[in-house]
Image (cartoon, rainbow, N blue to C red; front, side):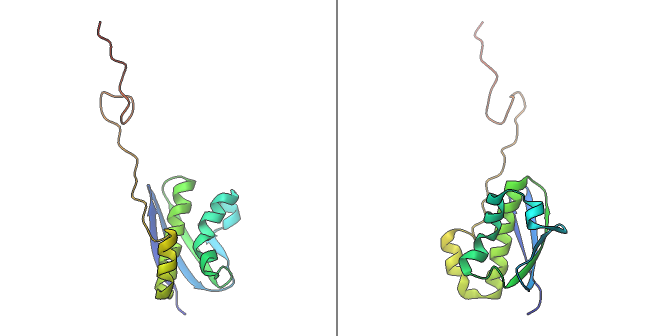
Length: 128
């Protein structure tokens, strides 16, 4: 098997994933998964598509993450991994789709408007 690559996005985060056959090592920006995401919840989010298909120990993953915060990065990485797994085996698409791992979450931060303190919050109205 050659190297499979895929891309995933969430908020302002972009994840580029390179998947090869191996023994389950996940490297993000030249760091281990546990070092890059110390939180167990974020590690779980990243591994969800692998655990669903039962291929956690089958593939090595190298990922480049940039932009956004840790939550957006972990979810972008999950999407990229799911897309790479579908490229390898098309039959896995249905299972991943049912869990929502192939859907790009398109919600972005709304921009701040001029004359307001935040995107929708307005300054207190004073009649007099």
